[in-house]
Structure formats: C-alpha cells, structure tokens
Amino acid sequence: MNHMQIWNAIDDLAKSKGTTASGLAKMSGLNPTTFNKSKRLTGYGQERWLSTQSLSKILNATNTSFSEFAKFVEEAEQ
Image 1 (cartoon, helix red, strand yellow):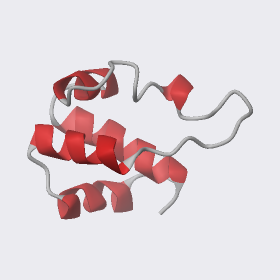
Image 2 (cartoon, one colour; image 1 turned 135 degrees about the vertical axis):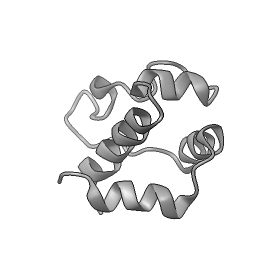
Image 3 (cartoon, helix red, strand yellow; image 1 turned 180 degrees about the vertical axis):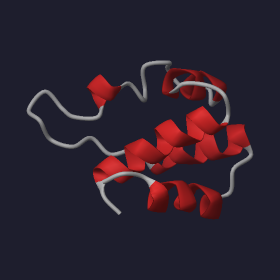
Image 4 (cartoon, helix red, strand yellow; image 1 turned 90 degrees about the horizontal axis):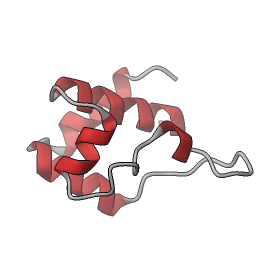
C-alpha cells in the first residue's frame, strides 16, 4: 500500500457513493477541501497522508467497513 493507492481509494470510494472527494469530506463533517488533490502533497512536494481520524469519519459517514475500504486500496492504481 502506498500514498497514491490510499488517495485513489478515497476517490474511488467517493465515486462509488455518487459523490466527489469534496462531497465525501462534507458528508463526513470535514472541510470540503480536505481531500483536494492539491492538498495531497505539501508545498515542498512531500506526501501528505490521510489521518486515521479522517479515515474513520469517511468510513462511518458512508457506512463502509475497513475491509471494504481495503479492497478499494488493493484495486487502486499505483
């Protein structure tokens, strides 16, 4: 599992729920820009990883189990 797979899995989860990454953030009670592609790297080009708190919020908001999310990760493009 790598950085790109995690973020692609979030995009795929959002799409499976009929929304965007921004919509997924809103559904989860997060700032709509939380999952923007521009925020996935720092200004210095370092990878910015999703927090476990944010992951927990999106899984709860979408009624998705961790194992279901793991399938999105496994299927995500690297």
